[in-house]
Image (tube, rainbow, N blue to C red; front, side, top):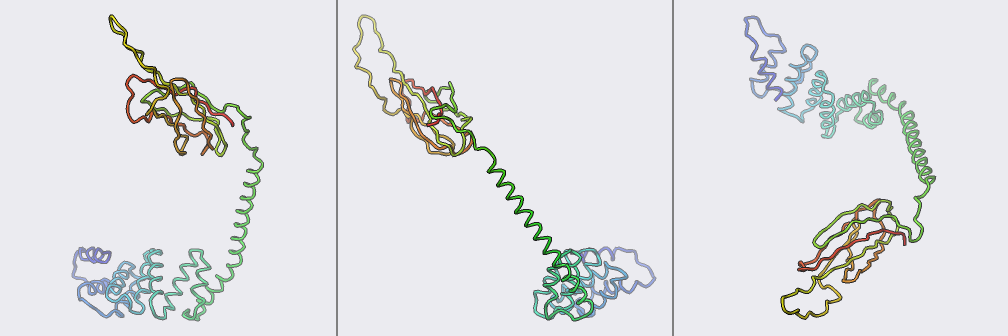
Length: 310
């Protein structure tokens, strides 16, 4: 697409009687003459790169489109990308070239130079310590420079690892020095409220002063009242004694993510005590009337909520 934009921009230039510059003419010929000799396109890109990097890019892009696996094509286009400052794209193209079968000596050397500029001597050594690397003075100097940097890099990494271990040790020591949270004495209250949950209702409480991992006892009192016998004029209807339990009344409590458990309710005050291990600091206590159906005239409530140490 970039080549198309470049060609379009060049085509939009005003025409003149003067002959066009050689590189510009080569690019125009590459875009209009169909398939050309790829080797000639690579040579033209090399000749024009110093004169006009954009035109050189267009020529090598054309060669890459025609024969991406031809020898020297990816290398030529990588050099065109570098001339335009596209170092990341050039490195990616060279990596692709090194993954294809072939010698790839010059591609390997250029990729090693990019790795050196990015401060990656380990990669330079990996690239150049192969038989495919040209045994030139340029390659040997690059390899020697990278090898000289490896001990210092290794020592720096070791120092960083030692600093990290020392920091972890300090954090562990600090955690050991921190006094454990004060435990409640047996039977002492950690939390309490005057809040009430009525029939058909639900409420959420925050259990302040309750600590994760500690064991506590939740206390609650539940009681229900029945409607009084109805009075009629002239006579009083006999009523049977009120039942001592209330079938179907279902109040439930849940602390944090623990399972819910039933709370006892009755015509006389019923006291519930549930032992639990706190899943977190200051967990939530959720209480609701989960009865399946409403009990006409029956009013129940849960009150006197408290959390104590066992």
